[in-house]
Image (cartoon, rainbow, N blue to C red; front, side, top):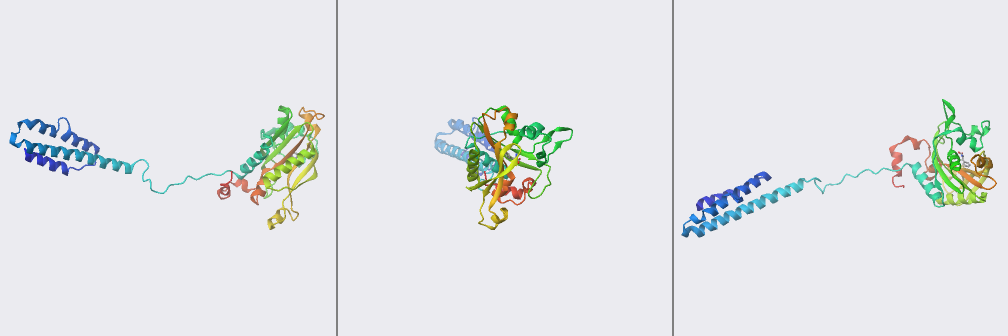
Length: 339
Ligand code: PHE
């Protein structure tokens, strides 16, 4: 009997497996309720007295060996599982996720919105497909008006009354029709003009136009607002207003900022003058206010409008407007760190 036990011990010690099922079968075979060890314990009373001590020691040794084996095999299995686990090898280098970037037009648009929202302007939007009234007639541009030629328009073929808006002034008309003064709003958006495409102009571009209507709004308010804006966006604090003409404003002006003549690029982009034209502006024409049901004897206001592409080209030194629409990843990737 003792020999048999010793044989079992040798068998237990030699046992090897990497299967969880076999470990469990092994445990049941030796340590289970009806297992080999219990059989030996049950036969203890049949062992002659003088052999009891040796027999007991042998059975205990088998028990210990079996328990140790089961623990060993289980630990081994667990460590193998961890290595293979869901994440694989945690020490290997990661695969970084490519971060996208905002389009430069969006970056500049957001900057302009932020600057004006800090002084109480909200953002208004309108349709890209407009009717004649909102794009022209309400803005003091009746059908016969020669200034309609200033803005080469894309008409929708089947209906001469419907067109692609040539400026976001149309949004300001809609805003005035639906809101009472005081009004402080900027209207960013995409506009369309039937122009030849070149490095300087495109048939699709973006504008931000601003409108301020209240009692006693003056030209001085306009100039101060624009000065605040140019300081914030460009860090330039000198502007000049040159008399100009827009049908919807009277008086009207073009706004130039003093860019400086420090570098060769400054010379090139300002044609050696140091001055750069950045937008149009003026006091809202009383006819426009009347068209939008605002009493011009009670209220006055100013409006301004600028092209986002032009400003982005200045800020980022981009030489060709067509680059904004080519979606060349090498171009777009350069704006990754901007907000
Ligand atoms: N709507 C004009 C344009 O598209 C810009 C402008 C807006 C000028 C408001 C004056 C006042 O060129």
